[in-house]
Image 1 (cartoon, rainbow, N blue to C red):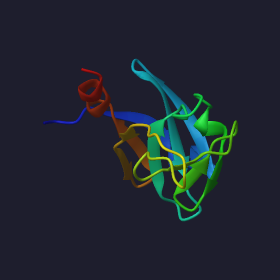
Image 2 (cartoon, rainbow, N blue to C red; image 1 turned 60 degrees about the vertical axis):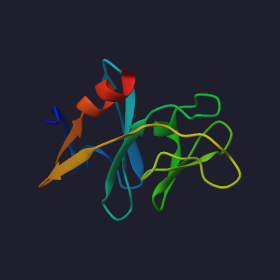
Image 3 (tube, helix red, strand yellow; image 1 turned 180 degrees about the horizontal axis):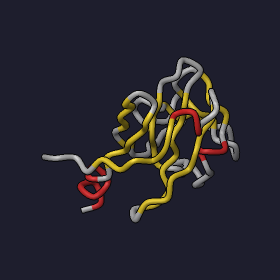
Image 4 (cartoon, rainbow, N blue to C red; image 1 turned 30 degrees about the horizontal axis):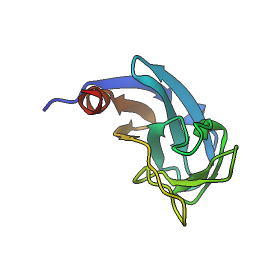
Length: 111
């Protein structure tokens, strides 16, 4: 299946250990940049109470939800520790700093 890669800006638009929110037809996507310059994209709502993960604190390859401190893996989208739940992860491509997300995966998951 061909991915539909959508340009979402440059890695320099996202601060280290920060996030940026991208609005798509399927909802908001949070794009994170780790301290190691890795980029991950997940749905921008915590599986617990829908908190805005893009406003959470990034540490290692996880984000802590600003509402109730749930920790979500940026790699798998799963809640870590004793909490249960998950958000969808979205494929990200970094081409010399230009970032792209694949929206086909969201369309497929929504069907």
